[in-house]
Image 1 (spheres, rainbow, N blue to C red):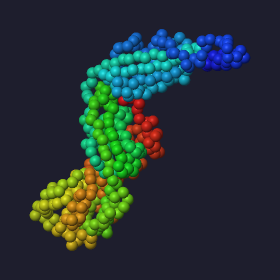
Image 2 (spheres, rainbow, N blue to C red):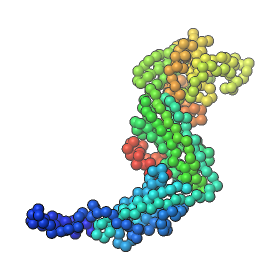
Image 3 (cartoon, rainbow, N blue to C red):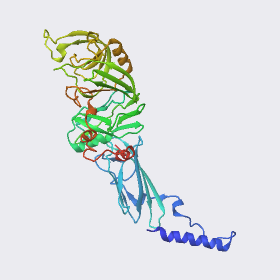
Image 4 (cartoon, helix red, strand yellow):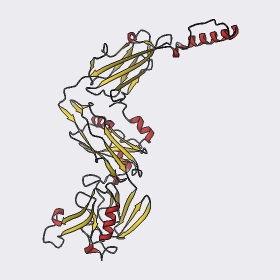
Amino acid sequence: MTHSPRTRTVVSCTLLVIALGAGGTACSGGGNPLTDKPYDATDQLSFNGLAGDGKKADPDKPLEVTAEDDGRITDVTATDAAGRFVAGELSADGTRWHSTSPLAANAHYTVRVSTEDEDGAPGRKVLTFDTSIPTAKKRLGVKLGPDSGDYGVGQPVTAQLDQPVKDKAQRAVVERALRVDSVPAVQGAWHWVDDKELHYRPKDYWPAHATVEVHSNLDGIKVGDRLWGTRSKPVKLTIGDTIIAVTDAAAHSMAVYKNGEDIRDVPVTTGKPGFETRNGVKVVLGKQSFVRMRSATVGIAEGSSDSYDLPVYWATRLTWSGEYVHAAPWSVGSQGYANVSHGCTGMSTGNAEWFFNTVHEGDVVKVINSNGDTMEPFGNGFGDWNLTWKSWRTGSALVGGTPDGPSPDDAAKLRPQSV
């Protein structure tokens, strides 16, 4: 290191000043080099072929900064016009820095390099450049969901791709660019449902009254060979109270909890033999004050003893295949005593209206002690919570296979500094 001789000189000057008294000095102009105005480090640096400002760079290639003439690099900061940072790595001897995250296409970058010379004096160089627009055969768009609005604590975040992504390395690029930030911060992960769909959920339900902001940084980022990301619309979710309804099919009852307090117990009927209600956690998909329910839509032939065509009120939807919590005045005599439905959870009109007005999209309905199968994780609504956290994480291209997810603070370190 070159700092030691200069440090000893400063100390010796200080001692001599004390010896001479306040009226005289023996040294002049020899301050701490860290307080000196940085010199122009242009002649000490090269930027992987960029001779100066305004030169176009290939976003397919990493940005490299190299020190020459006995100088060394002490720090590099590269940002685009939106303030997004480029992650990078500096060699141990300070002679080379290179980017470790991809540059965006058609973007404007500012690079600030700090150096020091062999005497420890600080240098500075600021370079700006634009990246070129590659010729791409395909653009990868992402539709983030759900739409911005108010949701319950069980609502997963979704990302629908318009092009399939199968390669794990490419999936990792996509995943790094999809940002989910919540206040308060929670541990969460993405899960690839298939080649074109991802879901994100926390380890546990969202905290009550959390704010969740979701956006994609894929715009201009290379995902694969001639496949580049495009801009996506961000979404913001405002989480409400923690509302969880637990239906015990064997006890023919539903308990509704709000922020941990049991606010109502409702007698119900669930699916009869052959039409058993699915066990497990389901997330409210929507609500309709009136639905015409016909058995033909769920594969029951007209004219059979199980066929029906009924006007149904206060219907809260749990699956795309047609499972609801709804008013069933025709089965009031069985509610609380027997399971006589075709899979839905039926209750009195008054209780159904109360339930309809109490729950919201994203709230949780959990069924226990039914003879039915467990709600499937994907494809028929949001059964995401029926996967264990360990199983959920195996569907991530970034954290799958690691022992456990990072804390919110550690998670921030995994996020790309530039995308």
